[in-house]
Image 1 (cartoon, rainbow, N blue to C red):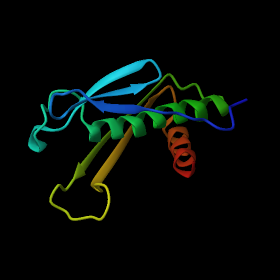
Image 2: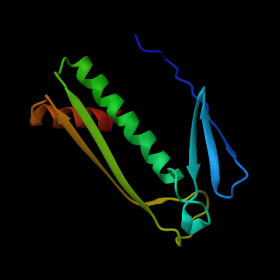
Image 3: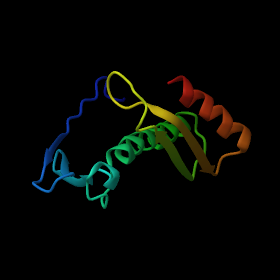
Image 4: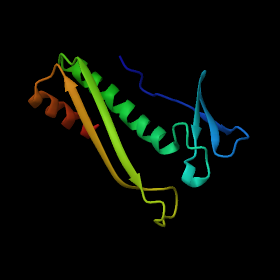
Length: 124
C-alpha cells in the first residue's frame, strides 16, 4: 500500500559564481544556473527546466502507477513539456507561465486505453 503522506525537502544555495547555484535533495546534488539573459552562466539546467522536470517526472510515474493498477501492459512512457515565460509581463508574485504544452507517448498500450489513462491522470 502506498504511503499516505509523502514529504520531501530540498535546499538551494549560491556558489560564489553569480547565477550558479547548487540544489540538494537528500544526498543528491545538482548544479543549476540562471539564464544568460539574467546575467547567469546559462550553461547548466535552469529553474524553469527544473520546474518542468518535476512536472514531467511526476507524470511518468503517475502513468506507470495507473497502468499497474489497471493491469495495462505499458512498456514505456515518455512525457515532454515546453513552456514559455514572458519576462516583460508584470505579475504580483512569482513568474507565471504564458504557455505550456505536455505531450505523452506510451508503448505497449492501445491508443484508446492510453487516452483513458490520460483522463485518469488529468483528474488526479
